[in-house]
Length: 136
Image (tube, rainbow, N blue to C red; front, side, top):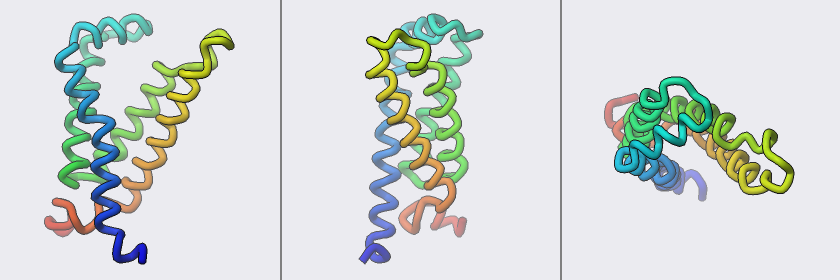
């Protein structure tokens, strides 16, 4: 049964992962100043550059997942980006105990997303993708 569902499940999985990144990247474009301010509030250097990198990774990676184009590289890039962002922006271990719960939840949600992206990087986009049309 799962063999016959492999391609539709791969497509739906890619679309659902892209749903996390593409809207976030587009929101960063519309709220660029706020994104820069948030990055700066974490003490990171060059927050303008960081915001641009986040936009490129989220929008470009999200579109790549949707199309199934360069999927393995896009998934790996998004996984590394998500891991780094999780450590910096959801560092629940550095918060007082009464403030940890939501950030811990967000951190581990992101770690699970990293796991899904790594699986996608390992196995590829599936037959319903531009990667498959190009012959990988």
